[in-house]
Image (cartoon, rainbow over all chains, first blue to last red; front, side):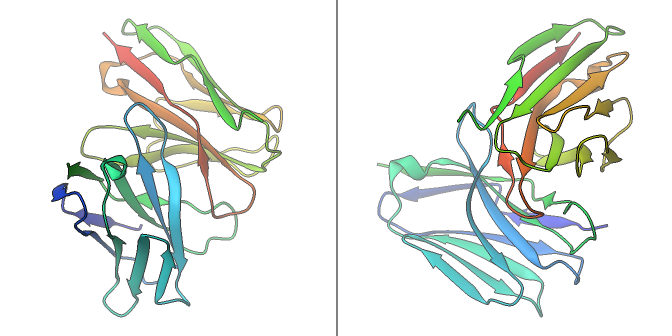
Length: 114
Length: 111
């Protein structure tokens, strides 16, 4: 099955700096890569996703890049703010016939220091 | 529009007891999922459903059963709870096979 590795497990940045979280996946058939943000005591919330036919996608201060050859994808957050502090999860999913089974990374605790 | 709701929010069980976790969604989604979240291990899929009356096993199904009698509800059952099932359980639903919407979670402690 799919295996997703996520690094780093913890990340601290100064407010206004950029943050980068990286994930690698093992199944070359995977073609959908979402990123979720989980605030304390809440469920994960989708913040951005990318499909294998696209190399980069941006949404305001958030961007995701995908390198299919190397089987890795990254989340970039620019101009970080204290409210960006949360746990971030990457995930990968193969194109199954029925429900997609997302495989999640182990998460990155991002702390933005004021 | 409440989205995905989970009942209860927190529960303490003794080893061997049984319980059912309820997930409800009001978005008319076909797909529903149950995950467990443990420290340092991300989210792992327990069971999922692709429509009313259907269920399928995920990555870690042992010790759990599920039912999807109504489209809007997905129940997760523990017949004989074990300390290894102490975790935070999340339900999710999706309209298509991609974007999943998560509930707020149920914290379960098995003593």
